[in-house]
Length: 158
Image (cartoon, rainbow, N blue to C red; front, side, top):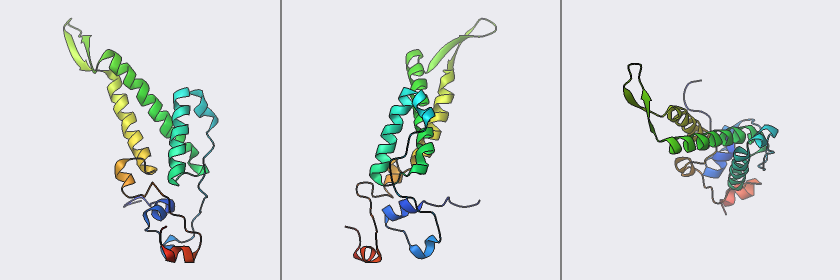
């Protein structure tokens, strides 16, 4: 699919750019705190991060039950990033290795590449849920707009 990804209706409603005539027939899910997948509890750090991410997204009005997997994947990547970061901090970003001819060479820590990969995935997932500064500028995360009827829509945000 070429072009931009479609923006979720919840984000359009929060931004105030939602138009019913352009929405078509789409599935509208009620916002709520998603149930944590069982496998997310195996990692205590990821489990705690899941609770934080789900709570933040729920307070912004963008999380639904079907977002549980996305939140769990974000939490898992965050947990992995934190573990790799601790390894790099303990050993240093540059390590010394002995070459085949006996010379000592300095190289980037092997965990740095994995850490950077995790960081890229984290930023992508955070952007999906409006959890980055750039994504938040497009969403009024402090007070979600709820439109219950056409009269509410006409009266504008409260």
